[in-house]
Length: 264
Ligand SMILES: [Zn+2]
Image (cartoon, rainbow, N blue to C red; front, side, top):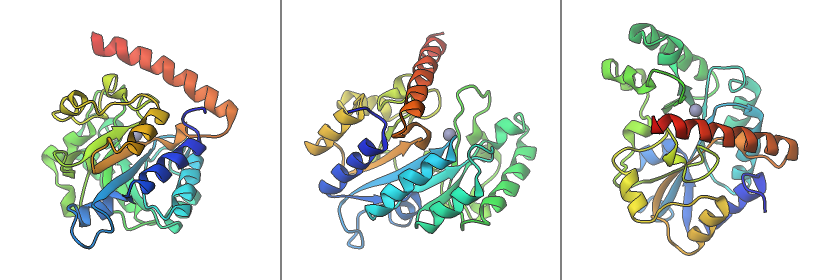
């Protein structure tokens, strides 16, 4: 079976549900981070999607999730490849959470005051479609600036934002998986999309898989922690063969570049 298709994505979610994981949005996690009686199961997975490109693909994963009665969070960027109003509206209408995938520090070239104004403007923009409560950094590896630096000077909570996955998740309790690098062990080459301080511990425990098939098998064997966040980039999940090959070749090239970069 080819990896990173919509079919295998559905299988991943179905396997999680079969093993008793509740599939929730980031907003739902923040409202109820523990596992009190109010939650259906003592196991949960926060489904996070960073819509970096090809917004149309995210409508497909959103529909799969809806059909399984799962909730997810979709973070949208301001660029036209991500910011497509009709897609944002459709995903919100399916009952998912919408958030802002911010990169204001890069856009404003590190000018933190300008970046904060820019952030506020775009937060209001996305609030036309959904009452945005959570935001998430877009961690472009090629950018000199770390988007989170904005929060060294300003406080998003003053803007009614309740959380940022990198900053408000209890990583001592929640295990993190991401498809960055088009695999599940891309933390080895990732520049920003990782959880420093915890990743080494997880790797030592053997919580590391390369393909989605391997991950699905491990879930089936009950090898995964009870609380997790899974981040995917819907641009790479497709059943379309042409698009699938393009993504494979592009990502392999990117991984080689990133590996050289990290080594130096
Ligand atoms: Zn991103």
